[in-house]
Image (cartoon, rainbow, N blue to C red; front, side):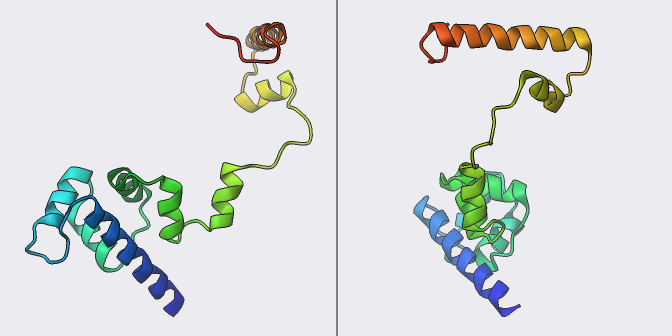
Length: 143
């Protein structure tokens, strides 16, 4: 429990620093910075208070708005908030290569294309794109 509290405290201190860097004075209740930041970011005043006082905010919508407001990647905010581990973020950002490319039929299955006419249209579209790519030397075809 103590580890969670110290992690939350570290996130709260970091959040307060980031808000201050954006030009908001959140040093006291009467400074007006909390209210202005809440209004400008779309985050409720209560959530801004939790961000900078306890750091115990796990609501993804609040953290997304916060990331946008401080101009930081959401992934970084999620790691700092203790929602993701750094290794989990790296795994999502750089997934391991698949052992073999997905076939057109596997892609159709993954996309839920089960009507045979739709599958045929999908196959033809993929084949056309592959031919265009080969003709352009492996580069994505330009419009």
